[in-house]
Length: 112
Length: 114
Image 1 (tube, rainbow over the protein chains, first blue to last red):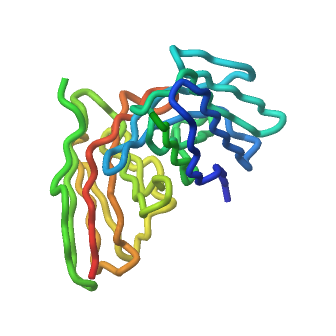
Image 2 (tube, rainbow over the protein chains, first blue to last red):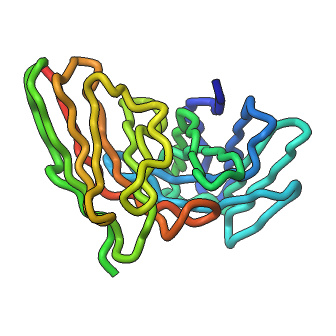
């Protein structure tokens, strides 16, 4: 059984701070890692994906991957109230099927 | 570019009734996914289509759930008979192809089984 674990939160940070979201996964065969943002009552939207060890930056977002530790994280710099949402970590094996296994999500609240 | 369309947006049924959901993916997207998202959980893949063929339905409760994608475009997901634990949001997503292609999600159908 493939497991993806996240702290459910809620995680509260003040506006302008760095929010750090963490995810661990059980399947060492996992190759691709995704972060989705889901606003309340809305559908998930992709923020970033990463498949190589190290950091990947996109604007205020940085994804970090450590396959040896089976750990992936998302950092949000200069957090804004509009970043308040649930962040879903998803992992996939590098197969043609591209099945995504999602964690339960971490609820982030950015306090103005 | 139009996004993934789903209908209905909300549905309330009694247990043991049947229900069907419809999805129209983004034009040109060969891969279509149905997910079930129970409140407080992440989405769980039910079935994946590549064009009109099933790629993975290992997590689909086949005794009560069925899905089809005739002509490789629109898809329907059916539940018959529904159980209380089927109450969830059913999300349809599509992507250009399998692999490292972004999955775009539709707005979902919120099903309540009473």
